[in-house]
Structure formats: C-alpha cells, structure tokens
Length: 102
Image: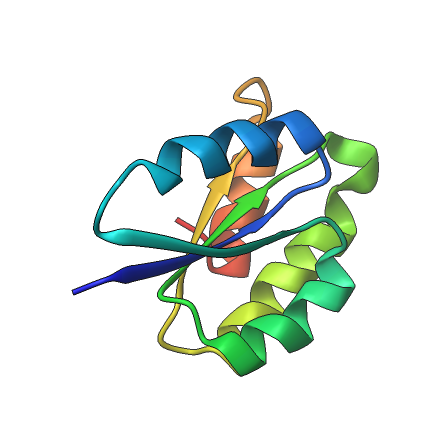
C-alpha cells in the first residue's frame, strides 16, 4: 500500500526538508506541499490524502491553521492530520488536538 501525504506549512524550510525525507521512502507519495491553510482545504477534498502533516505556526498565526485542521477532517474524513510545530507551547498542542490533529 502506498501512503499519500500532503504537507501544509508556512515555513518553506519545514516543508522542503520533510518532503525530501519522505520522498526517500518507497511506500510514500508526497502529493504536494501547500502554504495557505484556506486554499489547502479544497485540494485536500479533491486529492483525499491518507495523511496531512500540518505545521502549526507561532501563536499569532495559528488560528487559521486550527480552522483548516477541522475543515480538512470534514472534507476528507478518512485522513489523519498530524500536527508539527514549536514544542514550547502547551496551548498550541491542546488546540491542535481539539481541532482533530494527532
């Protein structure tokens, strides 16, 4: 089975490094990397990836990302959303989990 992954993040380095690493795995296809959470939702609805890896930005910019996580799970209910980001904020972790990410 091939695991189809979509990357969603605002940090170019985050997406590029993760994309390069995932492409080395034979069982993984990276569908694309996207930067804007609002635009990503419609693409995810069409492409239906098994996994969406979302970069959670710092507190000021996180609201749109948490909204996008909830919308991703609505348009692609079989997808798993994995959140990645700064580990220094318990609030961000709690909000990501509440939005439906793991």
